[in-house]
Amino acid sequence: MKIPVILLIVSILATYVSLGKLFEKAGRPAWQGWVPIYNLFIWQKVTERPWYWVLILLVPGIQFVMLMIMHVNLVWSFGHRGTQNTLLAMFVPFYIIPKIAFDKKQEFTGNLQWKVPGQRNSRREWADALLFALIAAYIVRTFVFESFTIPTASMEKSMLVGDYLFVSKARYGAKVPETPIYFPLTHHTLPVLNIPSYLDWQKLDYNRLPGWSDVERNDPVVFNYPLGDTVIVEDEVTSWYQYVRTLGMQAARSPEKFEADRQRYEQIARENLLRNPKATVRVRPKDKKENYVKRCVGMPGDVLEIKEGQLMIDGQPAQEIPGIQFDYTAITSQELTNATKERLKDELDLNIGNVERKGNKTYSMLLTQSQREAIMGVGIIDSIYIDWEPKAEPHKKIFSVYPYHSDFDWSIDNFGPLTIPAKGMTIPLSQDNLTLYRRCIEVYEDHEVRVQDGQVLIDGEVREDYTFELDYYWMMGDNRHRSQDSRIFGFVPEDHIVGRPSFVWLSLDEERSLFGGKIRWSRMFKGVE
Image 1: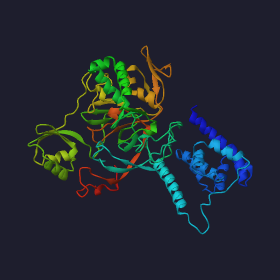
Image 2: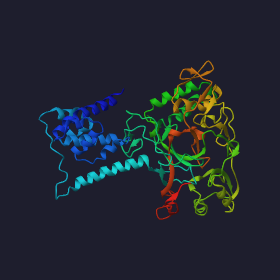
Image 3: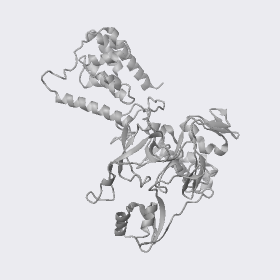
Image 4: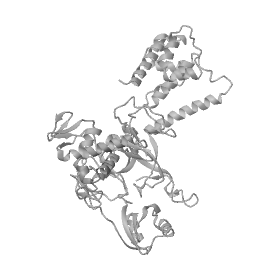
């Protein structure tokens, strides 16, 4: 057991033992301090605080802040005020509270007379209002909805860069915080200080409150990035696993050498990363991983395949999604000037940043089907086509697409077939398919996996099959050629699901000036489909 957990237990026990004596000094029967739960309500009466503070103690995360506040109010009610005593009450209550309780000279002084009849204490009223607002905001943000920003173009055109969304956590059922000790209203990092905003002293099991809907096919979904448990923090956040593969390939100098001795080169990459003073390695709990938003195109139990960019589910073409984008190569009759690009933006709602020069009069353009048809009528395009990425040749591009192994020659446009695991589904297990499902078994479902003498061992036992404990989903961006999604990071477990985007409350176009259409008024309060 960790020392912080021991201190927390000692603090709770010390306070519990002391309450009877403290209540006696406040003119109440001592037995009221020794009746669990009831003594908490009496505590609020003694300190003249609202009774509903006891209910806030049941809310994961905020309960530790509330317990600190209650300790401070209790200590203040016995005359121990000032900065030093306040800090003692917050951080070492197991010392100061028993000291007050069992010192016969210590007397109850009552509350701080915050409210004097006929007078107003505006500072105290503001403090009470701020505390209530903080608690209410925490509860709403944790269990009801949270604001989310779209930073990349991976979900265009349904969600645009610069969209500010409200994400409903209650729809699928809000997750109870698994890392409950953290600074309220933050995710994983404290602003300015750039340090973790949470403490991992206590971990709770995965639990979800009841919701009114399950994840449905083609829902846009916010989820915790599956490969975000270990990250490299530099100018941007990158998955440790992706970094190790990239640096390992560089160390090997060729895909063939890397595949031949993968373990060695990945170990070299790990050692180089840990020696790099600019690369900060951070290990994050599940609920503190980065938040991603994609569309759920594959459900538990589906057989998913992609053929020449066409998504197939159980052998049939998937439902068409309006506004889906692909990367087209356009050959133009003339070089595209800034004025021409501005014209394309005005007439076709084409993002200037999505038009990239590839060569002489040749451009890469992200387009929907309707934009593709419209752009041919502008008069500057001679021909336009999609270069579908073929299945990988041996030792080429396989390390950038899931499952990063030469046994699978998949690409982003030609992928699968792949069965998405469902809770209760049993699959035959062998070295041939272990690569596909190992992370699910080992990381998401917390089992030890080894291969020994050609056999698969799970938790030390030889296994020929495996039954999954969680449902899994397959997420893809609507911008099919510029999206880091399940084709890159694999399955998304049910315990990583955060919520569903509900509506856009603000949308800013970074390619426009403030008075030139920067605010996309047509998207304000628009629902997300």
